[in-house]
Image (cartoon, rainbow, N blue to C red):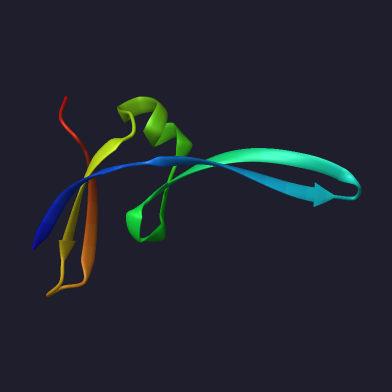
Length: 65
């Protein structure tokens, strides 16, 4: 099992719908994993990422402060 400390990146998306431009924000972790905005608001941007190569599971946990 591999374990590492990661930080969520804040990205701004833009979408044009019927002539009107909308902006939205979302957060990602390495390996293109999306993380809910509510989780970032509650726990912050630093997480522990555990990858179990035998079973193929990825576990994301908030980093203890």
